[in-house]
Structure formats: structure tokens, C-alpha cells
Image (cartoon, rainbow, N blue to C red; front, side, top):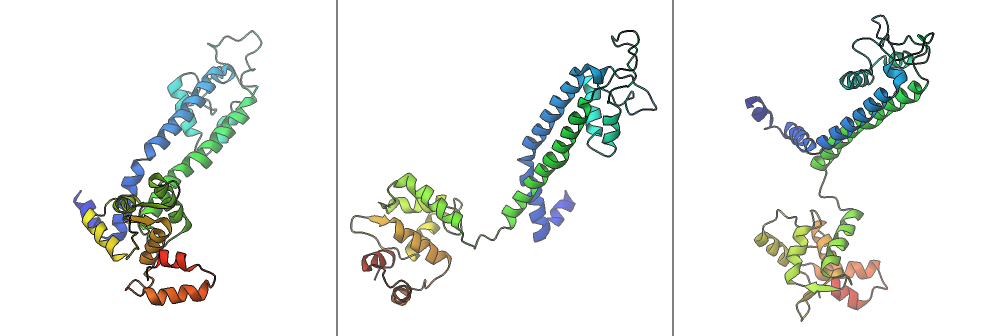
Length: 268
């Protein structure tokens, strides 16, 4: 624990440690999926009597350690089949193998155990484990690592979708909401567009005042003005009360912009 505490002082090591801790929250679900797949395939291997009847011989791949005669042994065999030489276990389960003396075979059928279904059985199991399950572990870890190392200062289209979704809970018409609801709304939106749930209420109010948003006489704020103020603040576009200069730039770029809409997003 002292070593972990020492390593956590570095930014890179701390990110890796937090990635590992955050990944542990989702990995049990992946482990449950693995256990379910192992359980299903182990039961199928036991129910296929052609697998369970194969005689256990030390010089073959079906021996006292690798067999389908009991559930624990079937799980152990499947675990071995996820590594190297799994195809040898598959080939040892094909038709023409010696039957176990204690199995119920007819006279003259000592070498009729095994099944061609072993090819589909082992290949499908190996592909599920090698290409799906292991990649799920990697995906969970990489997703948490990407979340912790993401540059939250970059605005993207997904921020607009989040803003519209949360705004619709207060105003489905995307028109106006009460100014008292703006702080609660912006604290539900994650940075950089919003304030985030960890932002104190007092700090959120100060940031809201600094955004210089136009307020209607009835105490309502509009959708367009709020979104424009958030983007302007996040990207630091003429935030030092340079409204007239910004209005001139917008008029130059969008010459057909209506004065009413311009006054709505940038107060004169």
C-alpha cells in the first residue's frame, strides 16, 4: 500500500490506477458473461454423449484431466481449450475414438465414440472467447482510460445533443424557461458546455452572471441565447463584454441574420 501511495503521486501512474479502479466496476459483468458461456458449453459437452463416452487415455488429449464426464472436468477442459493446442482436443473428439469401458455401448462399437459436431463446438467456443470476451475486457479498460484522459475543453456535436435533451425536460418546445431553472439545468450538463454536478451552487451562479445572458422582462431566458452564451464562454469568444465587436463580426459573416435574433443571442 505504501508503494501504491508513492506511485499515485505521478500523474500518469495515477491515471492508470484510476483506470484500473473504474474498470473493476464493469468487469464483474464481463466475468459473469464468461461464466455463463463456460457453463452453457460445459453442459452441452456433457449432454452430448459422444463426448462423454470417449475413453480417457494418457497418451491422448482426452485423459483423466481433460474430459467431459463431470461438470468440473468439462469446465477445466474448456479453460484449456482457450489456449494453445486446442485443436488437438477437438481432433481427439472426432468420430472413431475408443469408448469408455463403463459407458453403455453395444458389442462391436468400442471405437464409435466421438462426433463431427466437435468441429463446430470447439471453433465457436474458441472464437467467442478469443475474439469477443477478451476484447470486452480490453474495451472496458480502454473506455475508462479514454474517459480519464479525454480533453474536456473540446466542444463536439454530442454536447449539443446533451443540451437539447436536458433542456427538453424543462421546456419541450425549446423556447423559454425560468431563469431560476438555468443553474439547475447547467449543473446537469457536463463540462465544457455546462457546469457539471460537482460545481458548487454559488460558483455556478457567479459563472452564470459572467455569461452576460439577456433576461426577458418576465424572468425567462431563451434556448438560443442560453446555448450561444455557453458556447461563447466555453470557447472564450469575446467574453470581456465585447458585444458590439462580436455583433459586427456576426453581421459580416451572416448578412441575412435577423436583428431580432441577433439581439436575442447578443444583448446590445
